[in-house]
Length: 461
Image (cartoon, rainbow, N blue to C red; front, side, top):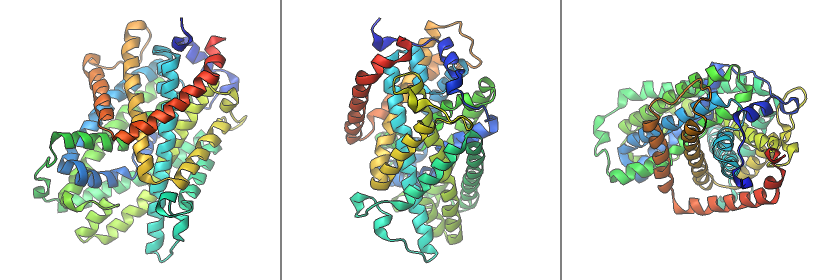
């Protein structure tokens, strides 16, 4: 068999996770893992994307855009839960593809996921910087503009974004227990901000603002779904930390599916309230949620919302950065990258080099690139991983039908096509420039694979 299509068995994947040299600590329970789903996924997007996407692409139909993206995400989430219950080890879609599809596709997925999670971490850091600068300005403290902007906008370096990522990196290096505790604290603050916006804003909803519902037609809603999908990226990151979860077969279904359902409800309701408070034509602003509250006279509410987002976005950076480190760790442990990348700290049991590499790259990207350039790059990597994970579950149903599965996707004949076709439609709806940049990253990945990975893979030995 060509080395491109070498596969790991389920048993080999489990054995690797038990090697002392690469052993991680199991510290996370169901609630902590569900909060990691929400913390990794809910970012500034929930307060920004409904307004900007509605104005430019979907109108009030952005409510349907969020629902459509949520449906695709839940369908794919079911596939993640089935595979995670069967192969409860680090690596997420990369590991699943290695078991089901073969080494070359696994490499592509893993390379994509490192790209996705690292870019999301940088994107959120830039958004976080914007909120910090705005709060400082409202408090009468003006930071030098060259130190708060990227190169494309006349700056030298986005210093607040760099400092925020250094804080997050220090938490990630301290160990998975502190990660779980910090994420829980910041995520509860974020959820409280969402519930506050809904509870206050619903009293100012005017149904007339929802008409016409689809001013840009069905194509506008589909394009909106592809763009707001960014708000769902990151949920799959919890399957990169399965080796740090207590009783993963039981914990994963509860945490992942519960988190995705809550996530979709939050997004749809926030979008409906925001578009009901203010006409979509007026929401082309950097902070549409805060603008909507100020528009109806609740200026103190917009300030409170911004403060909560500052804390909440730290959880988003932490969750996505952590996911990228665990994918890099899995690639190093499998020999597709130098094994030194996968070495873990003797007491904290975290992959130190992988963590430094991921957050170091995130700091460079966030310090010098704009949020628009980064956001376009993040979506296609996540959608590619979604597509191949769903295909992997279908393949394993035929290849290993008797393999024990704590959870099985119900009505796979229905949900698999939704996940596969939905991912393809959303990929096709992305801007053309995204494919060019993604193609360059993929080309670099193939150079690394053929130059190193194909000859050093552990499975070959």
